[in-house]
Image 1: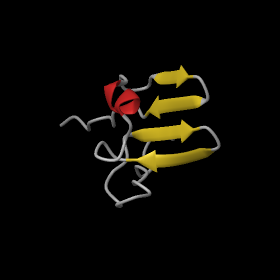
Image 2: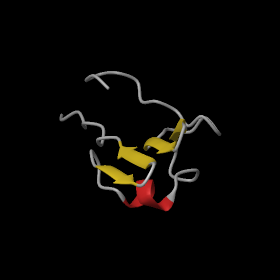
Image 3: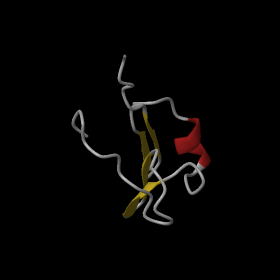
Image 4: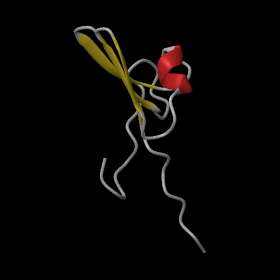
Length: 66
């Protein structure tokens, strides 16, 4: 995601997404409510892999100063 780009939204409910989870052959962008615990527990920018699953937590958005 490039600087200034709009944050992705959850494919389930449309809220702001926290990351992408890939469960075997299916991947989805999800919010905290719909994320698997491994994604919710990941630090911003972290990617966690486990067997055939991968979880990538988005970086925290930069806050404008001033």
